[in-house]
Image (cartoon, rainbow, N blue to C red; front, side, top):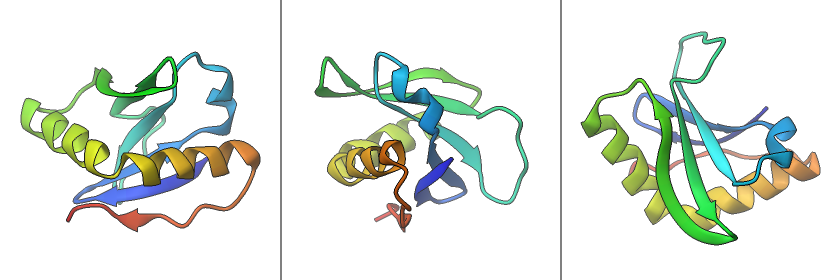
Length: 98
């Protein structure tokens, strides 16, 4: 599992076994908590084009909006991080709150 970025109380993660999914996406976990399942899954593309949308989520509307807006702003970085994860390369997560 590759940590991609941090946003407030969240960690955005890419899972290498997801490489065969038909759309790139990130899984969202809360910082400092253990989860067996992500609390949100967010698509970041459709047919190779930027398209950020919630796939599933247990978060509030405000939290979902904050996450999708941050992913939109930092899409190139996150997409690059996902590519590194799928290649088996180490990722260096950064704070994308700004």
